Image (cartoon, rainbow over all chains, first blue to last red; front, side):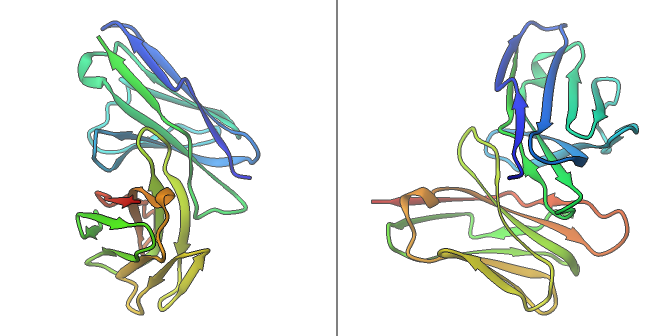
Length: 116
Length: 111
C-alpha cells in the first residue's frame, strides 16, 4: 500500500520550454501533496505544499509563477516548470499524505530534469 | 529548523551494527526516518511520536528520547541492502509545523 507514482522519471528539455511533472497516489487518497527539490548529495528542500482543490502554499524563495502546482484531484498533483533554464536542472520529488496516515509522507521516485 | 544528523558518513562490513543520530534544538512533535538509494525515492522507515518511544522492524529500530529532541536509528547485523542515505525529518511542536529534513548520512555496507 501507499504507492506514489511520479512521471516522467527523467526529462531533457531546451531552455525556455515548459515541463510538466505528474504525481499520483495509486492506492490512497492524498489530502496533501508536497513538492521537493534535491541537489546532488543534499537534503530534500520543500518547495510547496498543495491540498486538493486549493492553491498551493509556496516556501519562501520559491517563485510561484515559475513553478506552477495544480492539485486537481485527491490522487493527482502536477508541477509545471515554466520557461525552464539550466539553473532549474535538478531532481524533483513529490510526496503524498493521506487521511489514514496523516503524519507520514510517501514519496514518488523523483524526476531528473535537465535543461540544456 | 533543519535537524542535525551525525555522523557524516558510515562505512561498515556486512553483519556489523551502526547508529545514526538526529537532533534538534527544540522539542519535536515527531521524527521521521527515511532511506534513499541513489536516484530513487526516499523510502519511509518509521515515525516516532512519543517521548521515550522505541520501535523497530526486522533489524532496524529507532528511539526518541524523553525530551523529544533527539532520535537514533539502530541498524543491527547490517546487510548489503542497508546501503543508502538515511534522512531524518522532524516536525517541531506548534501549529502549521512542517517536516524538515536533515542533510542525510551516507551508509555503505561492504561484503
